[in-house]
Length: 155
Length: 46
Image 1: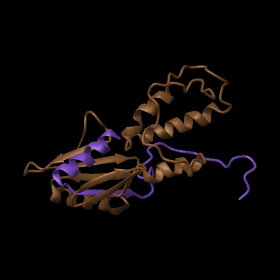
Image 2 (image 1 turned 45 degrees about the vertical axis):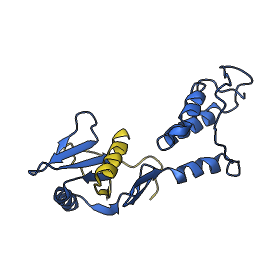
Image 3 (image 1 turned 120 degrees about the vertical axis):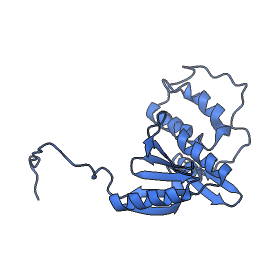
């Protein structure tokens, strides 16, 4: 198995029949995929023999991303993560909107009173940033609010 | 993270299986070469 040059957490192996198996690792979590079914089987067996490994079966949850697999395709979401953000910020009862922000609003730095807890703002923006992985539709608003991480104001 | 998304997309396209494993006791698998000494922190009561 060779380590990928461009991403060091990816490993790949080519079988004699020219089929690949891929392994992605994050600390102690591993995802395996590829077209080489025999190779994947052997790889799992190898890991079981050399490490205390738990087989979690088909991929369901990895780095806060929920994965649903079916015959028609694969769906990923951060449903629980999004709900956790809403609950933590006390926004769980808020009404959903189709357009998350008015693109014509011009926000400028240092308008209005400085926000009392910049850390809270920064943590929330960080969480929203991670949410854009599965919610590209909120990418624009998140990029706009990211511009004020240095000195968040009440406006 | 981009790699994870890439492989999920590839798996969807080519109908590859996707599996997940979890290593028990992360970090404890390496062997320590050097000699290590330890002492209890001051005030430690067992």
